[in-house]
Length: 261
Image (cartoon, rainbow, N blue to C red; front, side, top):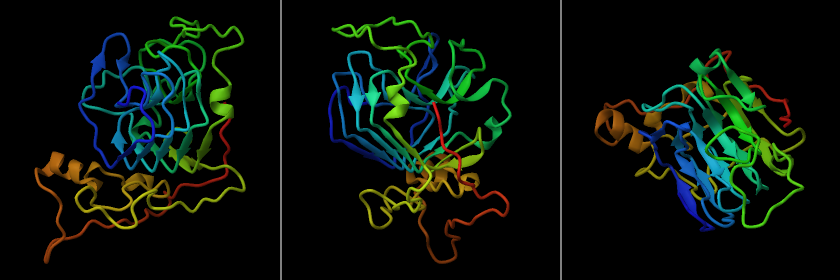
């Protein structure tokens, strides 16, 4: 998406029909880096199937932020393999993953569905919430296939600094079916990092993603999604039922589990 630029803000987009590659199966809708150390890029309120902070092909990345987005793990082009909802390759440090919903409820009991990728799995029926510290964007091998201009013999894989330096907080995932929080940290999230009210040209519900209400997410929370499904923007008018957000009894996300690599 950005090659090697920094300081960008992407918000309230709906990504679908993502490219399928036979060697990598389902590829990321957003790849935050394909260059030399982009940093301080923020993606907020996005709807997408997979998110990569950077492929680490030409260098490292840092200080990225994924906020209040729904990473579904599903797409019309999905062939059922190598689904990595969040992909943080080696050298992607000090990133923030906060307030997101990861996956969707039919994935919970899928064969081969795991929280964190381990080992060197193949591509058939392999789906994970997070793949962290792997050296290659194109495969799940822990053997380095693409070196940077300098070699780093001290690197081990999976690169432990990826998860040791991140902030992973207030994310609901459909593997653990919990909202994972950092103990003692603030759990009241701002609706947006930028907007104080609903950008009606972009959203139907503001914010579009709430990790406390993971079961009522819908692509039509986004105006782009509403156009995709119905062919028109949603407009609240007299006699028209407005979209509302309500909790479903017994299905509110819980907290208290700290993620570990």
